Length: 370
Image (cartoon, rainbow, N blue to C red; front, side):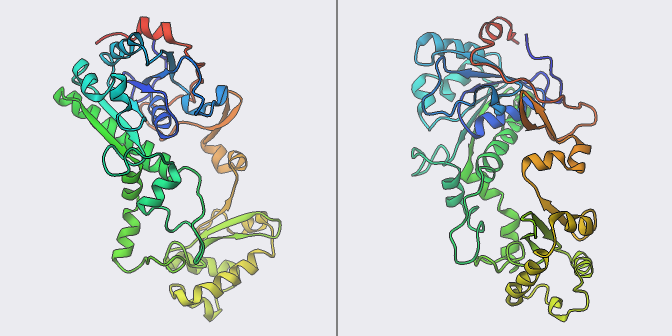
């Protein structure tokens, strides 16, 4: 039977062809929200895929069905499930699903209301569509990586949040939900082409608006969100780090006052980019004189716009994060609880992580037709 999880997506059925990165994360997000997500796993592990076993958090809350997609029987099994679901997620290179006999044209013939979600880095079209790549490459091409670094240095390699998750999985989830709404109103399914280059470029909208207004430049270290002393991170005496983000004048005045710079005329030049290097160094020298806990005692909770830089393990223990129950230990690993929060359909905690093929017979027997 379907999982007993509840949430705003209870009753929505999603078929996810096992993959890596953003596709599984999108499926996890929908499962967190109450959707019945069934993963079509390979019978045997994929040699090119990192097997996380019982720690595969992006598979939490899903059910696993194992079939051989290279056999007619395996393809037919998937098509039978396609007839019963609202959406499908696949993250193969363009053309792979078609060669398997599970492309969108075939699946939509079996279920005209299906929302067929395609998750790739480069997109289904364009000269790079068939090339291999990863998060770093996609956000490099889209422009989203440009500001990730110091002036004169190559951009740093960020964790796969901006591309795989932000520009990929979340845009696919929005696309699928919009498609499901349209299908329920019109009876018409469709294909959602979610590309990380598209999503990560779209995420640049605020920065592009700042650029158009003259408040953001192409030169790193010279713009409001990557250069000022009042919007930066600093190392403390104990090796811990803190962040300040006093963007608005009233917050900057409070920060100056708390740091003892209220009467120092050098700090009057808050928006003068030519003064930022010297003022950043003065902030750095000051923050290096005391521990992170000392600065938390002085600044945390104030309108100076401050926060310590925490590791995930530290974040799980922070009083604010604990009060909101942001993190939990489930299945032997630290993980974030489902988000966002709903007043009428509150979300349960993370679902269990299935074993490969654990629910094959159950899904085939009980994923009821409409």
